[in-house]
Length: 407
Length: 141
Image 1 (cartoon, rainbow over the protein chains, first blue to last red):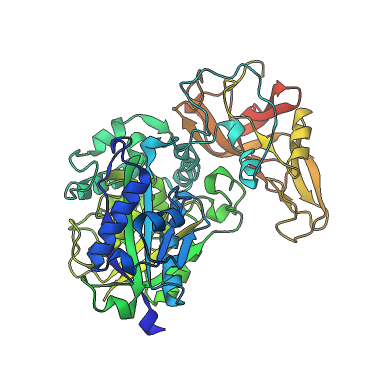
Image 2 (cartoon, each protein chain N blue to C red):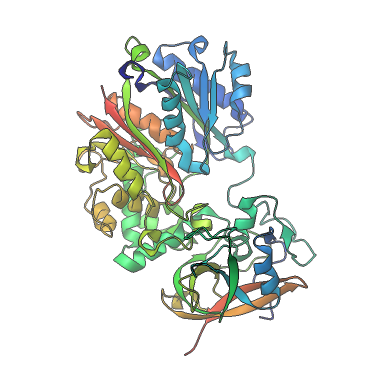
């Protein structure tokens, strides 16, 4: 087993742009570009790749990419089971399972997302610009379990992620006194990290707490700068065995542990989970997964030197900080206020690339890329001597996480 | 409610064989939760089996439509054309339901006056012959 232990050996990405600014380059062209760069970073060639894995129902399926890339033979392809941004670390986890069990030797995990070329997330297929249908609404036949379940959310206008994830965050504020300023400090911290990252879409746009507080309200308590970016771009990471990793171009990063999970009753997260246990409603839902992850790796929160936490919304990061044991439940706000997440001075430098709030929204696979860079001393906000990096996927939905370790 | 809370361009609700009885009751202004005939556990959305005891003996229990606000968000971005802003989405703990909460809108309320725990009551909005939507408004008591 130890010879087949999964490691990440290469990372790469296309250029990242704001929503729609990638122009007419197709999503699958960007996927190919990111995969080529990650494979080259590893010191491998596309002829070595025999597996492809993605998530979030990536439109660019493995079978087509394998053909476009001219892979000699695809032995493993995988799309993970949880929705959207919950699946980034799970795709890495599935790639690790594939190489550790001998289903494949070299698996590339990829995500390509040109949001500007497709429907906008959270619109439910309707347009705020189009003229309304003159017919009064009637009950429709659900063609999937998702749509039958969403029957208990859609008639109330619960379609936008910014509104859905506001619900547990508002509850957290009610229970623990968490403030908008504390959420704002988190956004300001990640923006500061992005200022050193040439890939970051918002790298040249400084953000102050005053800017955050003055930004328009989207879905209370989420102001504009509490919400992640909408981006065009693609990234990829290469997973292979310890044996193959040994002779490659860069220092391999070990996948110490990976976990996937969903709490009881979670289904589609805040769109459908109004009836989860009271104790977990105002959390990121990741506490049990965190405990399993730490248990597998034989480490605890105090051993984590740097974290790349999925940041769809600021409040969701705050709740993950509690889920993963960096502070007590309810103390996430004061933990942020203490400056703990800041590069250079904080105890838990977090989202050293700027995250989805400031680098780009590539459904969090860019957080895995940054996790690898932070253990290779390649981050633009490097953490000296970092040996353990926690990377998480989305909070408040079925999700996944990995712990990465320096070799 | 006399005026529409959302413009007609909003996506309509969808039902399958499990959720259809809930919507049929709603059309008659009856608010239901699913209640297990075996262990008494209540749940929403409805499911083919009880998520506690796994019995298939699922039935329905009508609640009063009273409740209190568990959490909420005030939304300032439109989904459909012509939508009035802001609108309020809340999670409501339903009185006498056995601990069931549901998502809905809070209507006839000043968003500034919203607070977790505020008492609410159902306000039905008739959409068409086979569709009524339960929204909630502040309750004075």
